[in-house]
Length: 608
Image 1 (cartoon, one colour):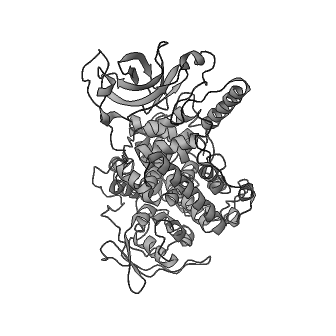
Image 2 (tube, helix red, strand yellow):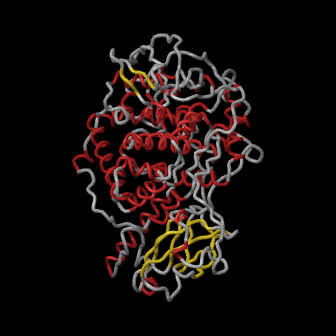
Image 3 (cartoon, rainbow, N blue to C red):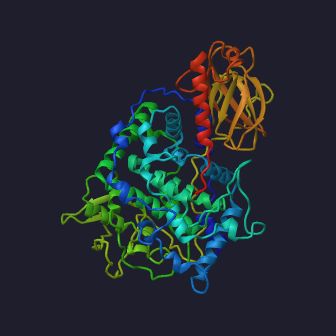
């Protein structure tokens, strides 16, 4: 497969709407919960869990070749060509060339999403995988403190599930230079970053990718909590991994190994009954918040929402990014060795199956053999297609074996992994739940699906005041509602869901009042000043682009005296579903301090 062809496949243009991500900025200062939520008890948070040790990656200053995080990918030592003779030049050259191709040809929208994932907490930014409405509910709930259990488990800054599983030990063990250190930065790569960013600042090892590992332990845990959305969540996680290549911070092999590591972290954690109980509590918390915000059952909310991707396209996108089309280094058709404990990842999606049956599902949905990273630890973490396994329609036969789909494919008995040497695999058919293309260097079909949310309609101007999309706010098209998110902050209305760097004009209704023209910041947010004589009450904010097309509109509420109050304190009122939040005196100072801390924490960058 040519590098150019493969980039259209594995480096698909991820033009997902920034709306699900930009809302984070608008919600950051909503520091006081709209819904009082109880987190885990102090006893739960201070307890020692058995998986603290089993998931540990050890000492980064003295990484051990015997630690699981090194063993599962130690075949990399046989591939690399930077330490004298040997290695696999075809694989490593492809690794370099595909990195350059994905980085250099990334679309503007893809770059903006990659920048968001670079600096934001991905357990929040990946929430747009839930769907347009559910993703917005999730982002606001996180910002409002309504999901303390989810946050404690998944937070970027010390989330419990990944707290003992740093990628620094394997990074230091393999010590492979990053693309912007090894490759020609003037010919091979394009610098992608926000203003004042440090995307190329890290000198830590490239293999495996720390951001990708984190995205996968966060995303896999979210998929376990919301199995109904597992294909979408895992596709968004794959996008987050691919975004590391867009930034030229990592190579595809780093991303593949990061996925392997991140998913094993969650398998190790879920094998600990006490830790699984915490994940189950967080799942109940998350489902409850989403259902309250949506006003219906989760299943019905999903049906009515605009998806991040339809399920079939989500599964296809995820599969395309499992192997990135690397040239094979081993035979095809080898029997898969399902990793010990991997069945723990299917408990929520297939609760009625036995552990052995879940292992059969993983074997049936596994990728074919031969990928460069498909031999480490004699377990096939590289081949595990978790999205397909979680989404599989399974039938249990009378003898206890399982079949998928119409029952035409049956599992081959799988060896049970043990800490010792594994038996030699024998050929077995490798079915998948949907037609796939083999990830080989041969040319692949073009037009692979892109992980984009269903597009929001861009509506032409329909007359009215010059520049305004309509003459009366009641005539704003229902289809464009939610195309942006907006909240009132004192004397300004903050709008998110825009494209960074683009110019937009704002209008306040019922009768259109021009709010001026502004440029969206790197997070896709913009701020318009409210007129001094704005009437308190319900309004609609509409935004049009430079061509005059309506981007979207949102309802906002202006509190009585909000503009006047904001002259002394911009935090006097924050919009959103929680309504205005009034603060004064020492309470206002405390909230201002808390808001500042939250903003600073959210801006901290991670160099993994």
